Image 1 (cartoon, rainbow, N blue to C red):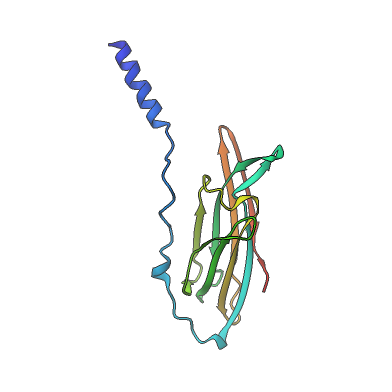
Image 2 (image 1 turned 90 degrees about the horizontal axis):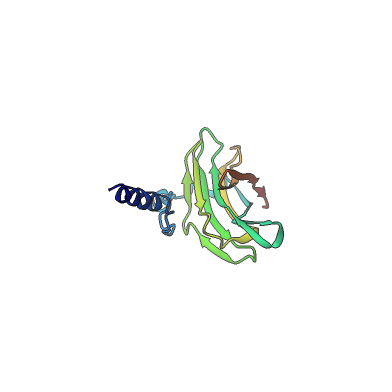
Amino acid sequence: MKKFIILVLSLYCFCACDEATGTDDYEKIDWKARIAALPSSEGLEQGTSYLSVYSQIYSYTQHKTYNLTAMISIRNTSAKDSLYLSKVAYYDTHGVLLKSYIDQPVYVVPMETLDIVINEKDIAGGTGGNFIFDWQIPQASPEPIFEGVMTSTSGQQGLSFLTQSTRID
């Protein structure tokens, strides 16, 4: 009986430690529910921002990499005006488009933050992945903030760092 209980407990522990192996089909943001009719472009300031994002970083040598989870944060810093996004595109190290998140303009309400999560197992972006955001805001509104938070934990070790976007247009 004792062996049976140990066997059951061992199997339970083994199954409990198994990591989820599913793909990241679920998207946290319902982009289709956010489709926006842009107001007159005369009253809007337009910009493009570049954000570096790391799916992997080098460890020890250029031949060994360490995988990271990346959270891309889209922040509307205005307390009264919506932010409009007309492009949210993810590129890999070589400049190849991996994913275009929207095909029509979408809105982000005042003071709202949207997050895009790139799973640690998704290494398609590589060591030099990046996002491009095309955005519009009403004149005199503060510019949006785009940030990347990269994290990973292994055993008792943790790693995290932050990147911030640069306006390129």
